[in-house]
Length: 386
Image (tube, rainbow, N blue to C red; front, side):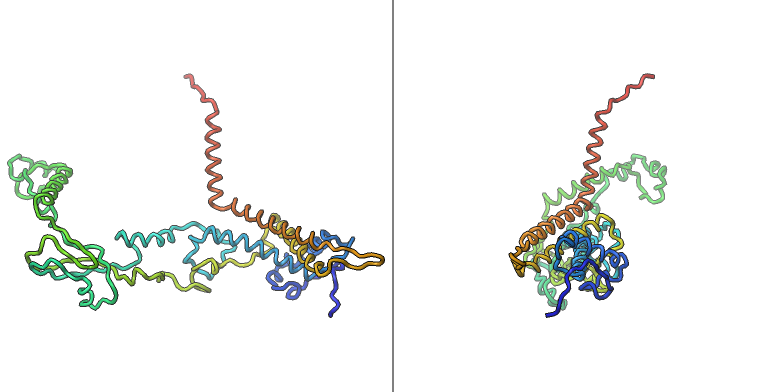
């Protein structure tokens, strides 16, 4: 077995050789900090009062993992917080230093399914068709119509244009031709040249609306109403047609509605679109851009990782013989402390990220506004005497 050197108090960082992945080997700040972190961790583990069974490569690996863990937690929180605004965006540009502005585009996209069902928009194409109506034929098979029109798959009827003529077509103005002499009023408004050659009173628009409603209610109550029933695309008309003609309707292709693919977006990946949390374009952080708060967290997490690694090394033997006696190693204490410290640091970082999220900040500002209002209410109102 090779003679592995343990920590001797010195460390030299060599780019491309000192860390397992080399994520930050080209970062001059990382290169400068790595030996200092190794020395800090070794001293906190007891060096030089006692041997530390790790070498500089062990400390550098812990340092690299700590920086990566910090970046992962920070960017994961950003990705989760902004995902609705990010989905469908490009994966070709890194978002590490980007300020994400909320957008309504994905909200609109999510609501488009409701717009389709409500008939006010959506992403599914709505088609129209016409059906020949036969005299004295009440029921029509729209499934057979689709087959005859060479439409593949099922259709879903959304609207049938089978209605009585508008009431305005049957609206007789009772004031027309009554000799009320109101033609001059129309001339005053400049409408005289467009008006019929009869005198009539210019009534409010609400009067026309009430008259139209009266005509429609009359048709519904006293006459056979235009209506239809559609079950499983079997259309039944009421009343039974007494003449030939065409009836128009609108429909969706069921296959279009059942498609889960958003054709507006390309496939995810490099140069494509963000489709899930795995291809949100966040990269490892630049160590030199991390502030002192983040670096302090990284130092502590590096120490916890080093402590955990040292515990595994010392766990190979529980006791070590020494002249005249034997020494018991502190593997269990190191491992317990390391795990507790790691968990506490992760929890602390996540709490900070949660408290700085958009939602938490908006809640904080709302609370400040309420408290400020309460404070201002305690200020006596000045009575002005003129």
